[in-house]
Length: 273
Image: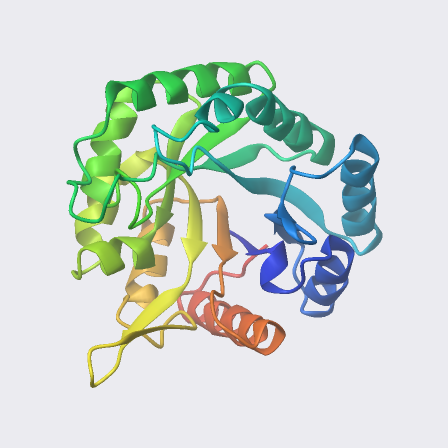
């Protein structure tokens, strides 16, 4: 199992993120933001090359990217950019960075009351085409379950992936996102996905006495991260587990998240690569 972190959870400057991640003993970085934009928006080929060189200078690679592709409503005019130039730019960036996994999202639901398991057929077609284009470059597409999107739970994501039915398209499993949408033990969604999981994001959610929610380091909230890690190990998962801090202060919070996840891995007998 490989431990990674999303770059802008440390800094929007990928070079700074790489330097700090190296100090924490990490070897992998997932690129999400480039200064004030979500990569690859606003990036030139030279910028992408510079990110790869900066990571390499600190002994890190960039095995995954999260460009926010298709995190948009179907009726948004920009959907055509996601199907066209932006999608090509995302694949170009993954190739230039040497990233073999690209995280994408189901469409945003029209409103929070819309069922998460009734997606439009256009979404399936978009992911089938995306997977086919990615396969030509040796890239795996990892679709993330997100509370504001369709396929917010492990069960519905499993059905979506079955409809997409492409060998290089799997799930980016986020147990905390599943919990936010449907407060229950991680196993319901995790077991529904099974071998479809190709990538993992790690954060946790706590519910305060007044019912408000806060994001906390893995193991400090409602998600049974020790159980989740043991389940991943038992099932032979050897991919990336990527820290997604989601709270401030970013550097201190991310350091705490990395330490918490390392501790959970060590207690489970897994030395992260």
